[in-house]
Length: 329
Image (cartoon, rainbow, N blue to C red; front, top):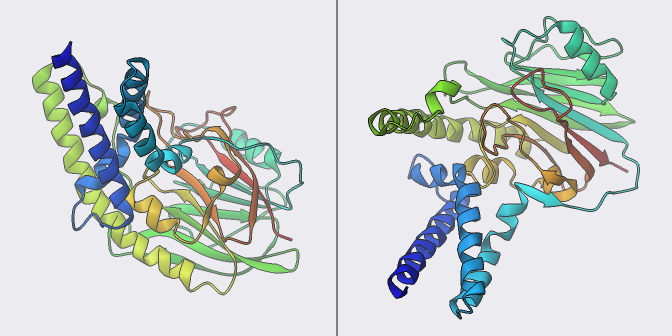
């Protein structure tokens, strides 16, 4: 029994070190050491293992349980970025943002997508992998600068600009659009970071050691260069955020999970609408049987998030739409 406990202690310590390494994504960029960013993808599994082993020590009445419980507090905020239980706000919102990767190549009728979007009555609709040239939303004005993104709003567009980067194979990672809403101007930034371009068959393990090993190697070969591309895209996006003369709402498909380099640096100085007002799971990508949150809505500090919803009622894409309500006055 002592040998088993020793092995479990080593395993628990190893998981603790991996989780601690994940937190370093806030400081160490992928071009320096991309492996840290890889840890963020495994956070749900690592955290679940950490909690189970901590529970084992509690049940075993071992003093080390207290140590692991206290050290586990280091990952409290990291966990809230995946699962949150904020109380429902009764205060009405005066600004609603809807962000949705519509996965343009999916065989979804334009009428179905239009009907859904119009039913939500959002002030601003942000689409990624968009079909903006194929849909029309009555009562909405469409921005003109998008490539892989589209902006629709019921309010006045003041100016807009594409956010372009030399990284990736498209040269575009989003747009910023200054919109006048109820007398105030907001900079709405809609982004779609470089995708990993995985097919489900590429990440499904077959139970065959050699085949699974090759798949894992292939996955890592795709992940590492993409992390580095994201670093370059983030630098351009941050410029649009930091130089904005107006309050900012940053949303879209980040193609990265919470606690990643992308999350920390794109969200710097902004509020994550989910951690501020969300309830339940933030998982927004549902094509794999694994919790993946890659769709986000952030806002400037003085824009108050009141509610955040991952709308799982609609499956016209491999993403769920995310909707946030804000108080701006």
